[in-house]
Length: 96
Image 1: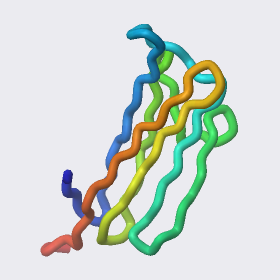
Image 2: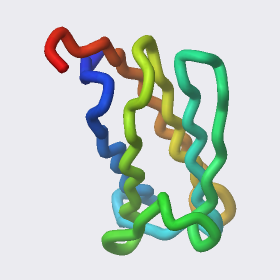
Image 3: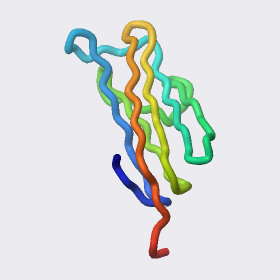
């Protein structure tokens, strides 16, 4: 599991494919769950947090505001049905 520091930022990237070819899903959603068990949902085309860089490729930059285990799921629906879920650890800084 990757580890980051409170106050930092992590980029979660995903490329959706069909038979090895990068393909845009009909809808892309990012679900971000904080260590406090609060889940925020972002939708591509509605929320600026999800950025498209090329056909099928998207990312979200998440600011890390609290220590503990975070989870992010990037979900494609419609033309590409897929989920890429990742978790990572965030720890308090020793120097501030």
